[in-house]
Length: 372
Length: 115
Image (cartoon, rainbow over all chains, first blue to last red; front, top):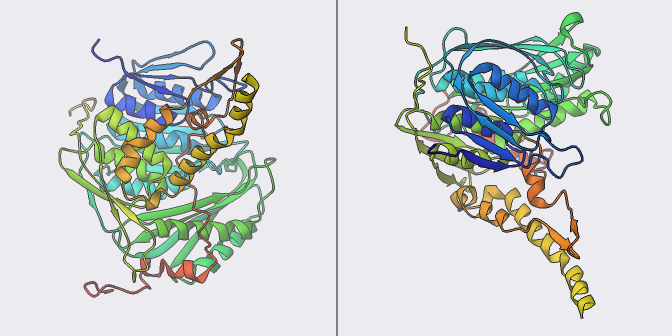
């Protein structure tokens, strides 16, 4: 064989490597997964992720050694279709969904995935946040139409889980190049305050404290309170807040916070959480750009896989995760971005430095998609 | 003679950490780095590779440091969350003023119009 595939060390950026491997068709070997740890090898949530990947692909070869410290992955075809998966509760559904969002447009048949597990936890982007930021972002790249949906059927907080999410996405043969260089001014702020298995009053307290901070900037704030009961409320109590700032040019910046999972540290107070979350949104506005910090890698991936034309996206400061993602894109697709730092001028009050990312797409076309 | 050398080794150990601390601080302030391209595609990766993996003690035992910087990075939590800059105090008026014009309620450019 011409290519022996790519080799990496350690379990960090696990999803990036497997996702890019699936899209590029390059084999990947990950060694030394927690090899010095007291409990070495892949964790349950990673094994669960591999199983999910196995479900949406056809003909993948996955080998893990006995201790679980070495993983070999030979990607098969992205198949899609209806998939049901019980996600491990160590990580939230967002962990799995982030990868599915990247893969879904390139499937053979439209993906209809039902994921069960923890819908909201403090580590990963929650389903509510992905729904309000990642979906509009993907629409800009031409991934749109009926059957593009993400909804929370049942909410399940960490650590117990018990939530359910439905995600469906149409397939595309090619991805449109985009020019997102001006985010525009923020015209409104929307949000969801959710609570399960606690007093419904918690959500109102969250809304009040978040409003207190944000009202000094803009009056158009509407935060929806979402209290799920009974069978739709999962197994653990908790509450949280997702805030989204929408700009005139249709960019979305978001911030979120969830209460500390039951039995893991100090319990959170809704007033503090609401205020801190509002401040997180201000931080996100300060960073700015056309894409918010947790979706940077998704935007960069879609730019890379676009048609052979120039794409430009203005981002805030690159997160460590995104920087590693850029390196992985270079490894898998041989694409390097042009990075131009835009410093704000003295009298401008528009937050910090921005980075203009420019690249020419690889002209990826979805050969899996069936012609009709 | 040997003892002396060992002592020196221990005495100099603080310097190893220093380099890592400096590079950590460098990464934290990556927003301010002008040669971003070099940061992303260049030097950082090579710097990590140069670190020695293990040291041997007396040829028989190995010093196992499970959380050395490189290993720690390689096996860190895989999350796309970007943690906020802790130096930003969002209850200070100065900080709030720095983003006023990001909102429609702020000042508009000459060329643009709110309508």
